[in-house]
Length: 225
Image (cartoon, rainbow, N blue to C red; front, side, top):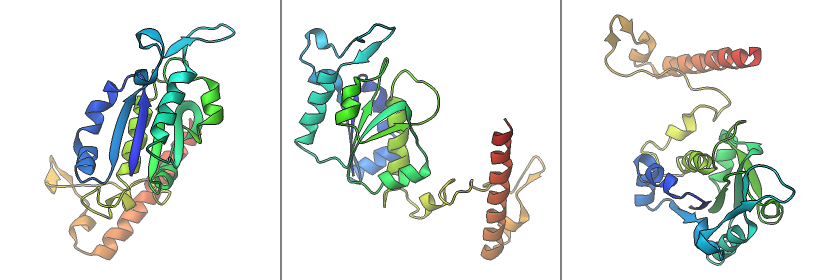
C-alpha cells in the first residue's frame, strides 16, 4: 500500500511515522508513507499557500492552486483509489472505514489547516471526507496520522501476530475484553482464575461475556450523557 499525505506542516508527521509499528511496516516494505509539503507546489512569492476568504470573515483558507498542483503532480505517478480530505464535517471515522481503506492500494490524504481548503478542491478532486471526531483541531495532520495507523496495522504482515488486528475492539461490534499479564497477583489484586485454567473454550467464553458486558455498560453510559 502507498499513502501520500499533503500537509502545510509536514514536520508534524515525522516522529509518528518513524517509530514503532509504522516504522517496521515501512522497513518491511509493506507500506510506503510519503508526506508532501504543500509549499513545494505553490507559484506564489514566499511560499504562500493561504489567503483571506472571499466575502470576508475571520481566518485564512488554503488556496486552490498549490493543492491542485500537488494532486496533479502526484497523479502522474499514482492512480489513487481515494483522495481523502480530513475535515470536522466529514463522515466519522470508525473501524469499518479502516477495514475498507485497508483493501485499497493507493490513498492520498489532504490535511486541512486554518479555516480549511478552497471548496472547489472538495468539489472536483476529493472522493471521501473524513472526520476523527466532532471537534476542531489546528490541522488535519493528527487525523491523517490516526487514519494511517488504523489502516496500516490491518495490512497482512504488519503486526507480529497475524490474528491480533482481528480481535481489536469494534471489529465485531464489541469492545475488547479486559486483558492481564504477569504477575498473577499484585497487592492482593488477582488475575481471574479462568485465564489461568488453560481451558481455551472457557477462556474464550469468558472473554466474549466480558466483551458483551463492557460494550453494554459503556454504550449505555454514553446514551445517558
